[in-house]
Length: 383
Image (cartoon, one colour):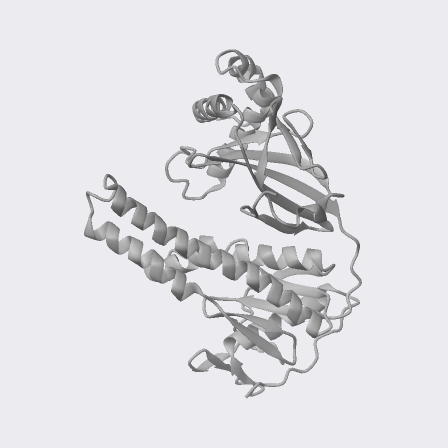
């Protein structure tokens, strides 16, 4: 029986559930075509940059034959290659800062179901680019998704190991709201509750940041040697991997804890903040704060909350996060600081911790988006 060495993540897209299953495989002779695909994708990216076009028709006419003849890619894989490159190029164009041109550090091959690969989830067998591949690691609960529709996949390489990341989707049953809870995520903790009570889940950010700092100290101590000395480099990698592992473990557990709390409060709707533009507004922050912000990976925590909610048949809604921790949940006035992380409303006198205030406001905004959900009631201070 293969060991559980890999992961899965899920999300919502309206009423549609999306899950990605990551499975470790034996490459089975895919190394050569994998390398050719990466070289071909770099070639396409260079062409896109020179010709300043992202129209698929133009790219197909100009490069399809070259990808097949020069890089020896199968017909379907040639199409997948330029589609992949266009997607990467678009992402770079949308970045307001852009920075340097993409160099493809994270290498992957875009696969189309039934044309580039086949996957039988019941028998746990896969065929990639015409070759049978052995699956040697997959999540324990993979059979929970046996009735889901298999869509596109990614063949990735990490070190010397190859992984097949299969995306699956399913139309979810409409959830009739019976109650809801709100979740406010910050560096100090994850605050979960409704308009009457709030539960705090401490984060492990300081622990993860400690290991990241150890890696950075080694880099500063050996500014020239760290790239060439394997012992130093491996030690730095160990610290970075440790930091990532701590936060991944935290995100997984938070997902389960939040759903358990929703169940305890008889709620089947979870309200999360819409954080789409959060990272674009951090230039004025200190470097240390920015490091912690990037390390925290708020969206990863939200993804695991969504994943657990999807498994339990709960609904997730996103609401605007703007001023959620500064607006009075009773009268809607702007609150002023009265102590450490404490705000007070000058109009109605309501005083509370800013994180509790955020939960109350998110709960209220979530209630307004669900016509059949209980509407916001008067909130009581926890003091």
